[in-house]
Image (tube, rainbow over all chains, first blue to last red; front, side):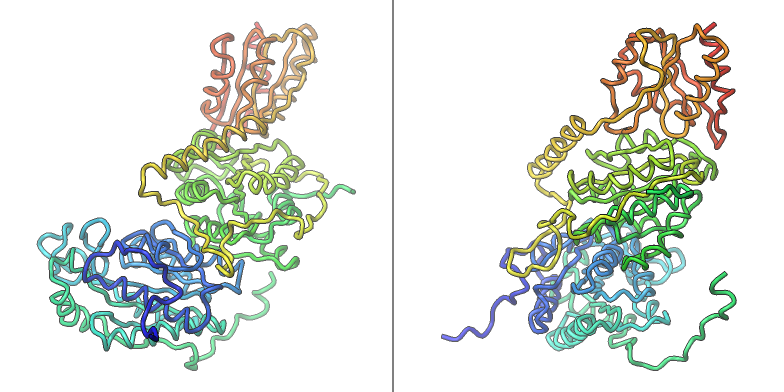
Length: 261
Length: 354
């Protein structure tokens, strides 16, 4: 009998700690399939964050770091700059990347580190039990905004990939989602593209993946998928926001007299 | 080899290059900025890597990544920056990664000032960041010694797989002195690092991690670290004495770094004016592990002890631990960037001796 479906080689065969209905498992698989298909597993280095995916090193069948909260892009910078032949990716949630780690992601993107960032946005802190994230939707109830996020008090959710797309440094930046099979197929396409660009030493690449958190949203998995579609997709539009090959106005270097003072 | 005149910070940078370090990540802060400035020019000349991080927090995490992939790596900072690095150093120590840190100490606490101080002693020697870890702390008292300790720091870090700090007061970083620069290490001779993150080709994945959700595993790693620290305590304590050759001392001074040199001058000044006085100086070179036994041995000769620091007396408790109440301990110190002069210390000595 021919095996037509199984674990990607880049995933370990381990029981998952993720909650039922959570899309982390799906996104792990998309990363692993991309590494397999591009033949990158033996050069791959993953960097796990602090948050629900803190244990990602148990699931990816490649060399792994576990970083401190928010600092994965800095760890990735150290690893990739010292070993440019490695394929370095971070896997971070929205608390990790968009709150405590905002400085590191902005500067890694701006330096054009040739790493791949997988940014899983489920609009809440999962691991600590459902607190408000910078990506929490207006009106969304969490344990630290029990009356719902109030934009006049907490501001509006941060659209991280839009923010990063304003940087002049060439990059591949996209947003996808993982709540329907069709969206998963598209997410796979952009994740694979992100890794391909790193493998070809082109640019910084990042994919935000809108994700569900049925447990902390207090919804069933199918309700959560619906909630993501109705509430998150309109605010966080899907698609490729920035490509490295788009011609931008050249920025002239400063006058030589200021260079070698 | 002929001596060259170099500023401390630049000599420290060159010593790192000579020691086989090709990777630097750091952030500007006075009075150590000449280390990154020097290496920004120097490292590309030897095919090395210099990255200016966006913060000390990022810099130390870049070190985590660089050490994790098996490279010799350095950062340099000054007191407030070293505080910001504490979390990252805790991760690095827990993951058994070798890195070298330079702290050119400035006056604190808070933003303090940019002038020399020794007020990071307790931070460096009693833990720094969270958890059961230790830093090996080397305290040079001259630019030459800073060079020699830098050269050795990378070997210590690689041997024990642990972070090593070279801690100099601002004077060590800013002063120019003639130094002999050691030869270039052959990069092919550096220790193999089979645990490093190099891509899981033909082997199981390597994982660099400090998370232990199992309390049993966390406990086991903490005791594995403790065993290593016990070994360092056994093997790596270093100190020097000056004027301690006789059998009796009226006063034994304990000081480290630049302060020890100033005390040496003060001691000579007092003895020159009163030949009857016998004064010795004990200088710890490793602040952790602290040379308790060597100090206890010298203290036995002395009627009393004087600790001199550019702090409010952070090393005093280690001296107390060394002598265990057997001798009176006096203290003299200035802070905030004020550096006790030889005359200041001599006055204090004369007061004690009368």
